[in-house]
Image (cartoon, rainbow over all chains, first blue to last red; front, side, top):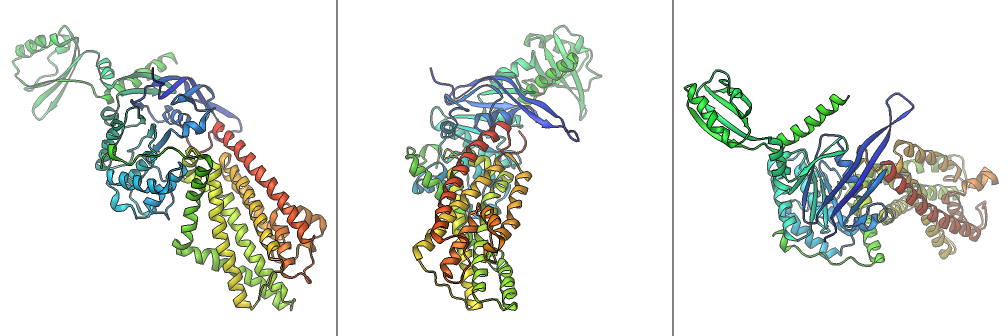
Length: 332
Length: 281
């Protein structure tokens, strides 16, 4: 069996922070016993609110932070004891990075990092030119880093991450602040990159649900330092839907004509749009549709459109984190 | 071009080749910056010259012996090295941390030490350009000539002093892995007092043996005294003999290199434990 690309067991990380205006310190638990396993070749997404623990987890995995307790392994290597060897197999690209030296050109900047990874100069320059072409940055290769736009700079950072050909790539909100075109280019290349060689693995954190949906084979939701959901996007959507969801538009209706009273209808919500009524229904199963159609026929309203809908990953996220939030409120 | 047709990355080379490549990589921005940043000449060479020139006029107004002009110019040249050690080495990680470069450096498989060595190599180049400019311009403006005796000893003083000074810079820079503004203040403490006790613009012996002995813990003090002895063998009121000073400087260099390496390892470990390599996790 393959060694997991990423593996954590009961991983805990807490920080002691100064309370504003006070001398005493308090402890904040950023990760609260996370156990996780990512197989080689997977594109794994980590979703969570700000402060949920995503970045802390990544920083431990890329050897920048020590865990308070538990164990973390990357490519089978312990991030504490084998940090140097872990670093040979990984790179990280973060969103909104303003790293680098403004005085260097894009090509020089990337070459410098290639040298930190021990690459020969000629090979480094070849790969830099090739990767810059891939992300559409060839024309800017001799421009100074300090003169790049945010999007160009982030494309350069992505090239930096790919330059040493890492086994595992950590992407911490890589498209934050980018325009649609630049984000799409980066996502397209990331997909191509992971498919090009078996075993390449990506751990992605993002606030953009569509990004996780488009890129990831598997998604985990982290909330207050705990993983509260972990599955494929499709499976998470099914679970979150809690039944079959439909979107109907009909001739104008008065309310929901008591559709929520129809047996098998779990939820019914109506909205008036441009002289039509839009109905959002959650049913026990698809078979309940006939009863809904009958009820509408009884109200003498024609159905103008009919569509089965699946919840988006964003719905899944809001629902999952929201439920957990409600549980916590009740416990309190 | 697609991800499938990229040039393959060759297997990683041995540790020494990797070390040299990392040093080369990090030294590059500093070396290239000397020629590329036009403001550098003004801020790093011409402006600091004014301070040096001011001391020359003080000595001239006092009708001091002409060798004092030489003292001041050599002091000005040494100032270039000291400023480089303090601002471009000791404090550099403060800027690297603020810009997020520090995390990238830490994650590089070469480790932080070769990167700091690269910074030192680039810094030595920058400081040498500036120090040479000070000596050349000072000599031209004030018609001073320098004729060092014992060239090998002269070169040796430079080499051991530079090793010690940049090791001190690495040691101080490691503080920035854990602290921020506090470490900045620590490095600032070294600035002005060192100008005084190291005898930048006068023979250090006038401070008395006890003060000179303490000041000699900074490699600048003995190196300046040795350089002045070699330039003015008969007139300079020496602190110790040249070869004794070279010996002490060599010991200091070894101790400071060891201290820098040890401190760097400890601070790196502590920074990872405390989460101080960047702000906000």
